[in-house]
Length: 242
Image (cartoon, rainbow, N blue to C red; front, side, top):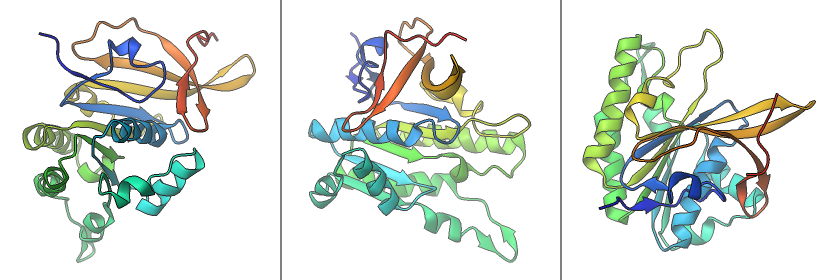
């Protein structure tokens, strides 16, 4: 029996993934700043909301008002879903203000964070969750082994405590930098990389599905555009060539 698929919300991507994301799993969207990670997340949630689902967006680097403003700039009105209690945008900043004490950063309790999130999800009966980005919740200042433990704990806890389909975002590391990307990629059920590449004397945005469990993939780097009212739209007839 084939597993239920959840639409990504990205025009042109679902057919490539045999109908979308396998339901009830966690997926990583990674890329440098400005490549479209947050827009990808918004599209994923909006598709669910338009289908009558409920959703939770955990805003880690931005305030909820910033998320609403970014959505509005693309022609999406989130306020209607928030007012109807179909969408909850959680501000994660209190978790970080609690970290500072006695001149030293304290670790975030990953299990408590997921437990708190799960209580909101269950109360709302949400089926889609976004954590944007996931890095600060697991900490980047720890040793590599400790960081890996935190990432594993987060992904496994999401799976154990919630039956939602989840998108986690992370920044693609620059050379010499340490990042959660690379660790969580092995733990999540799928990984999508967004990039900006220089092609024919111009920058183009591209999407690569690096991994998707349970899905037969043809590896391809697909060009995409931002379109008002639609967000990310794949351009299947444009394959970037250097």
